[in-house]
Amino acid sequence: MKYMDEFRDPTLVQAVIAELWRTAVRPHVIMEICGGQTHAIVRSGLDRLLPPGLTLAHGPGCPVCVTPLETLDQAMAIACRPDVIFTSYGDMLRVPGSDGDLFGVRARGGDVRVVYSPLDAVRLAQENPARQVVFFAIGFETTAPANATSVVQARRLGLRNFTILASQVCVPGAMRAILSSPDNRVEAFLAAGHVCTVMGWREYTPIAREHGVPIVVTGFEPLDIARGILLAVKQLEAGRAEVENAYERVVTEPGNPGAQTAVREVFRVGDRVWRGLGVIPDGGLHLRDEWSEFDAAKRFDVSRVKPVESPICIAGEILKGLRLPADCPAFDDPCTPDHPLGATMVSAEGTCNAYHRYGRGREETE
Amino acid sequence: MCLGVPARITEIRDEGPLRMGSVDFGGVSREVCLDWVPQAGVGDHVLVHAGFAIGVIDEAEAQQTLRLLAELAAASAAEDRDREARQRPGAEPPS
Image (cartoon, rainbow over all chains, first blue to last red; front, side, top):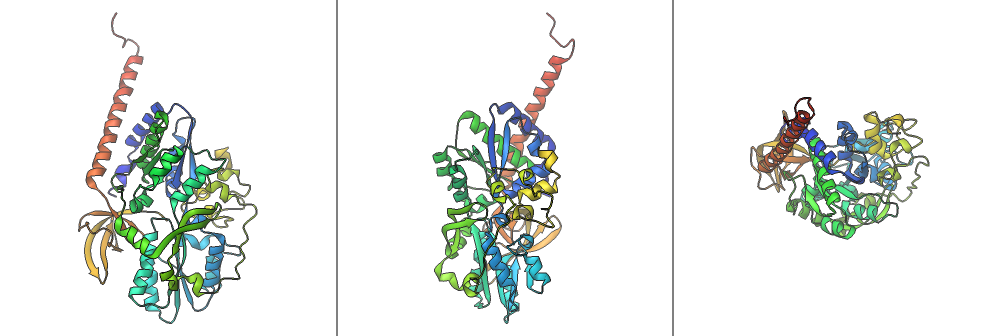
């Protein structure tokens, strides 16, 4: 497919890797923020082609993984109600809550449906005026404009039966939290290309300057990722710490102004709990007061939710890039995508899922 | 979740306040919202996420990136050939 196949050309990837071997002199740790990039790296085997001493730490950029357990439990409590059609992106259905998952709710008769776009959920609300339609609005900055537009559209249509359960998180706060952690080892970031498609990269300039880390806006094909790593290593070797764009065909410095306006109209920036990471200052978005009628957590009584995390799962450490899936006593046994203990094993952006899916078992990573 | 897939716009229409359209993902057609890519027309490629086009793909930038990398690959191949030539017995220049 155009704009995908050309950026998977093995000859060009090899050339970038060869240049990387010539460039990397000292050991470095680079974190790819986005779980989509983690999967692309493990699937293509890019991490096995790196020069010795160059390590990729996998970041927390998996919205499904960082959605708080409490919010997930609230989702299940709402989805159990007979008057509700609960809609969600597919990945959320198998994420373990304190007591089961959304698939389990559906098996017990709950009306839980997967939608491709939030506008599909709005359409369901139009078609089912006697039912309450709730959309599980999770995501990073990439998804925030779409989620915001769902409530704007619901208001335009005068819908009284549409709400969202929001868990919107923002990347810059998490980057600061990782860099400020006493056990941080990350020296450079590959910034998530599709977050930057929406937001541009201006927010990253102060982070690069204040923390002295190179930040390279990076795409998702193997060639994009190899080039992002090369540019980050070039900066590290030269002692530079700048924001650089290696995804020029899609990302511009200001980002997408229309999408940003949609987000600002509906959401305000505030502190947010990230599952596994805790409260991150300015780590997410909340519905503005003037949109609170669309807040599912206010429309439905979710006060009885009491979240209980798995005592074994180390997803939090994995999301911070401090440990690898093989360090977890439950990895691959008993924790698998069919019977996950943590969200990182479920999601198509979760690190444990990538290591399981592409055969990076315990022996492989030891 | 943050998956963005390139697609070609095949049709644009206004549906009330939203600018909607059809896009082609290499053979699969889908309805998407085109509100945030006002500059894009039929035939342009956009990046689609959760039913919304979030950006236009710049053909010239894509070609420029590939050109730069092809030059890198050519330089790398030439360096490899030089090294092999130097290592081949009898390849040393006559003294």
